[in-house]
Image (cartoon, rainbow over all chains, first blue to last red; front, side, top):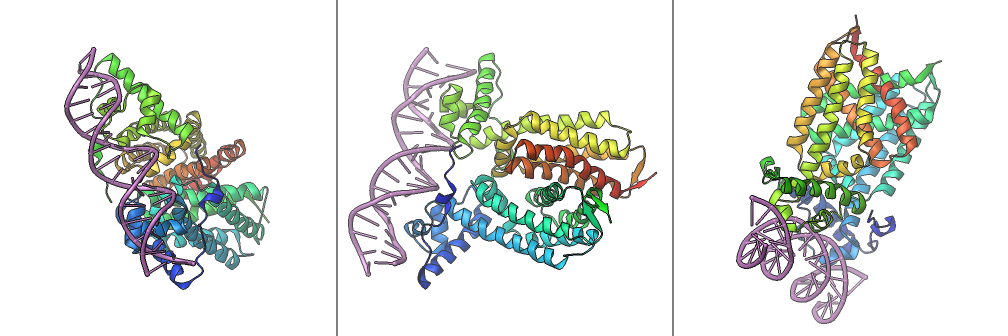
Length: 211
Length: 211
DNA sequence: ACCTGAACACCGTTCAAGT
DNA sequence: ACCTGAACACCGTTCAAGT
């Protein structure tokens, strides 16, 4: 694979002055806008620069290439999702397993919904980009959060928390993605809201020993 | 969205002579090879043509643009998966719900595994391409197969087969994708083999009324 | 009928010149 | 310090010329 090392994806320089901070912010916002109006195929460096009101050269001063720009946008988005998981995990620490399943799946879904329709656009970015390092990091943090939560369950103990954690995380992210990516209609989202907690509860109860 | 109508994705002409059928076959095979060695970013029309041993012009005689080529490759792949689902559905018609869950999830997973590592490469293609019409069709056929299977369960009846079908299909495809796309290691696959049937069984039993 | 490959438009990226 | 935009290399696509 012709894959750039992850370090190459970092921003070229961190803005130190108010003017350049505003520039980066504008580029950031413009990227999402262009993604939404022109799609991934229409996402052009020239177009992003124009929308942000700067020249291409300026953009390249902050992001060494297009990938780095998208990487930064994606990172910002994913941090928000991890935060939501973490909050839910604290709220349901020591709760009953069924409540955990509900709380976790709802928190994840709401975090995604809060940033719709950016969520849809960014799935494409995540798939196309060389993001393994970033995704791996986010996944690891999510799973640490979930494992900690499950271990604290008041009414259940797990034979293999590690496996259950990975499976649950995969099911949660995969299922939501499968829906949002192809059909983000109100009915599809209603289905997710209703069935996702059922799936999580059923799987967790099947994997745990009551105590 | 700057999206070409789906008709524009069809091959420009169907090969009528043995020579051109061989040409198309070579282009097809070359596409997957280039995808595997150079990644999606490195997938160039020139490169595919060279690998297939034809000129760019020849390629454009069969596929009006790069998207059409990828679309055709993806279509071929997806048909194979639907076939696997259909076979499993026939094998488990009228069986017990738990056996259906096992059979369906195993069949789906095996179909994906059989075409690894093409599976991984094509996830990116599917995400980037304008494939809604194709995906919608495949999804509809998968869900018809699943709905028929569930309705035939010997020991259970569903409150809302439609919802359960959509949710199960989403869980199945989404979960497998979430794993294969980011980590197709033997351990990850072993996890899937063990946990996917558990998930399916648990969710189906939670959604059904025993009879 | 089918194939070739130079030619064209466009995009990512750079860098000499500006403030 | 930060910004500009013409210039370069490369890719998707076409089409006049070949067999």
